[in-house]
Length: 461
Image (cartoon, rainbow, N blue to C red; front, side, top):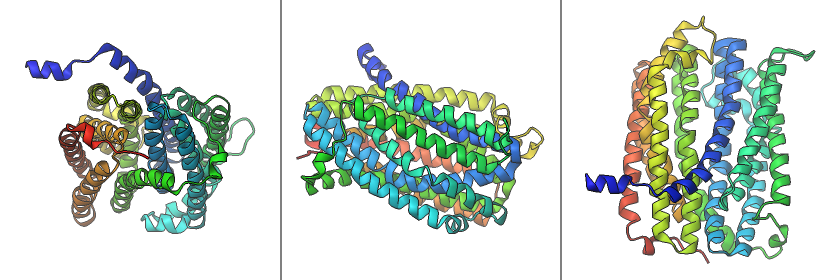
């Protein structure tokens, strides 16, 4: 009992530091998720399960690539390295790493957008989209591609700001994007204020303009006020060693996201075989789940930044304290969603689709109640992964994500969903198993590998 009290004891000052960084990050990601949520809700009210499936599958294709290559790879590498250089008070190196990471990200963003635009139809076919979805989905993707590079570049600028503990600016960027998206969604989807009724196309246009608006704000702030600057003078004395340091962190982080995202995409392909009702129920549940894990993501961001800063300073004891505090707070907050999903499942599903779609609502409510049990394990997985990244280790989270996604989730989904055609609720039971194993393994490795902390820290030149 005494040991338990000691492990759960939280220092008020440490809690304040963690909350100061994590709360804006939580709000930021909740607002980003709301952009997708608003699209899903309005499109569901406008066009039912076919429209929801179109936007859902198209978004899945787009953000699978952008997350793997930029948002969860280069952005993670930038935050991890720059946070430690900033903590060590090596501002010149911090600026150099930020500039090199952003420049590399610019090239990757352009190449990614071109690929998605050119092969949008083939990607949807490959993803298993039904004929009723492919045509409209291709149009949706092509429109969104106009603003896609701005979305990825904004993600990297946000990473630069987070690296020195500024999570408020990325939050404001998300507010700008949500306001623009929400306003234009309502007008363009339903054809208000004299605008034509564009439906799914209107949702795509709203998302595109929101992405561009967010980037403009982020770029202006970073140029004028950020403590870490993007200064292209560093490109003149190009350093292969610096690029190697960035990619050594970014590639495993990207591969971790690939393990999750590709497994999720292949899963969506198999779920498609259950029909549009099951897919729509699953998509709405995924949307609600994506809201629920935002607190975990926010505390993971705080852990990466605070742990990284303290590692840079050489204060490993405080780094461990920040990590433990983020874990306890994050798990506690996500347990609130466990209660909400168990108490109000049908009411939450009804927010995303017309009440006449009773089959979708009933099936979605059953899925959501299973998703409720995922929350603590999901929080543990995300936050411990963030702690590892603060120490400069992106390989361990990748390996565990690969094992749980490709040796647990995919085989079970293939057998029970694709071959046996069981209910979509079985898929959510499989997800529960995956997250439980993922969180447990990460915590075990955290305890084992971070105990001899002084010898474990990744060193930079």
